[in-house]
Length: 308
Ligand SMILES: [Zn+2]
Image (cartoon, helix red, strand yellow):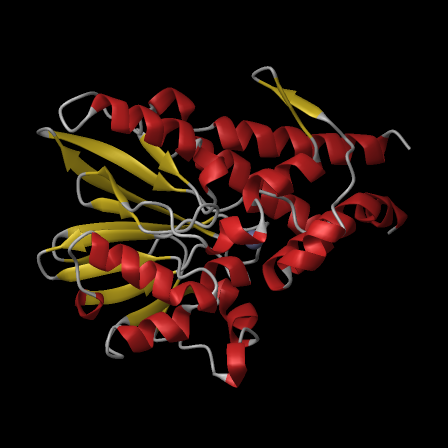
């Protein structure tokens, strides 16, 4: 038992910060996680504190619209500066992935409108994982679609979602997925891979997208940041998830926070390249950079525990 208490010294602080950052950004900013251990991946040093700061940015960053844009094919970014949200469009309606905070519902709706799409055409709402900064807005966004969008969630995240009730509203859950189930709409199919660890139902979605006459594999990554308590089951889940995501066919990788896929840098290159230039989001070699960072941190925490 004591083996799993010590990693908790760090991971519990990390996890607590994650929970706080989801529920109370200001408090999270005032109580950052520790600055150790440090890991170096591709020449960049990361600590638990720097990773959280990189993911969340300031409170203004979490709430401010990022200019909506086409990532590739029929996939659009409609999130804020540090909280990802995607719209996947089809001729039979659209899929929205990650509603973020409830108070961001108008921001997401503005992005959908700015791109020329309609909220009422959203038929399916998916969520990356059951933390407030990604799925708190499910009820509000569902209402903005006219109530017809089906909130579709991974089974293992249902208990956490049922406890997520902003303003006392029950969390809408219309359909429950299991590992490797598919979601299909208008000729688009997404496969839901259970990549547990960060939450019990953390889900990595895969699909394909067509652009310039070619087909590309897309991975919507779930966070691989270790949760607050590294119990044996959680260690097993994280280990399985690291291995699983490395095997997914991938040409384009995006994540629940823009920092997890170097969005700012790629967006700037996209703007410079223009509509006929190379798409920087097509980056097979970069697909597992985030996996490398999070696995290095996970192993550093475990290794430090083992050496004590
Ligand atoms: Zn999270």
